[in-house]
Image (cartoon, rainbow, N blue to C red):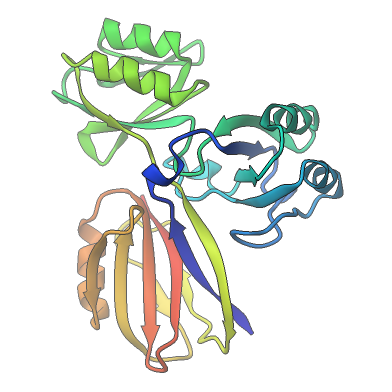
Length: 277
């Protein structure tokens, strides 16, 4: 038996405040959540003792990070009546398993931003200096220095960038939005979560390669009646009964995280995260 995997896409306005903790694991295989949204434990007994002592109500993977290497190491933690600062301190003291813990909303990633430049020639990345991202614009460089921006990389179009910082990205966003001679818009990266649903006799799909660059293969012992592709915000990009049409559309989309929903002829559904590189 398998479980149907569904993505819970958290609306930004539902969690306007930092009501939980975003935690980065040292190793994605140690401290892994035991289930999906609603899970309260990990596969590490020491970490479980901390979670239990603070009456944690949710311990789950926080998916959709624009820096894919962090996608399996980022966890969102929620608790109803606990002291978040005390929980944060206990987590960071457990440094063999936890790299970092930050007060954060479950709706978006606390260390990332999307940046759209006014002109692709101004504010472009030039690398890093002393572990701080640099550009060809001195004003942008000063902001990056002030907020410890570690990575700044093209994200799709030439004037569209993603960044990662050691900072509170709400403050960084305000600084970038104010620098409107170079920056057109900024936005948060919304998080997604897996839900576990009822058991079903699964059609055993295998989707590869993932990440993919142009198209991907789907192997299953059942008949697929429909393919639906969504972006990470939940917007439907294509719904078709033709794998060829899906392949054509997949080759045209920008790099990023997507959700593929397969509907089988027995009306069962299967959803998997895909990464386009």
